[in-house]
Image (cartoon, rainbow, N blue to C red; front, top):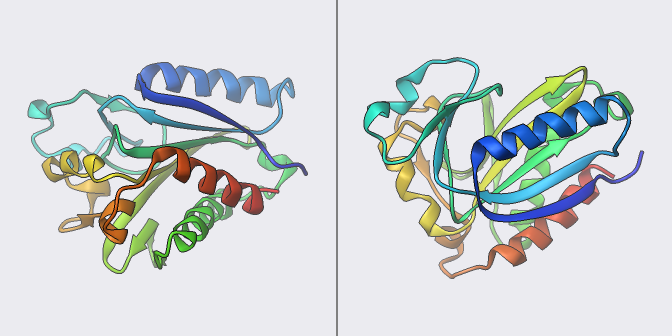
Length: 208
């Protein structure tokens, strides 16, 4: 089992276009035409809701300032946009461990390792997928799977600019949750380039 290929797609990317790209990559991975790949990027501002179709997490969703997209992942409503690092993992679990829960825990572990390098003590919370700093949520996860090939992945709040849009929703359907970011926790500015390098190294360790 080899480490995935990593591709940095840049920033301000349309959600639907990247979703279509994921679907294409999943099919190509199922057909064994490509190796495992992890995409790293920042989206143009968008709210998304998972398979539950329970829009209560996007209260007042008709009046949100950015588009709302329903997608085929687990989880409720969240926000993607500038200042947030998104990672989409297209992995063939038949070549790894055929367990979606372990896949989620592995993604969380890579984020926890990365935050530790930055001096942030991050944790999991029982029964709540994601990564937390004390009672503040810093990363959200939601995945899908096709014939044991995964898609979607994680969203790590890096810069403070990524936080304001969460105030208009109930992030991940958790009432009263406070969202945080890397910058908020270390009280200094960070570059997305630096975080991408750290996350890539951590993901390589976990998915080697």
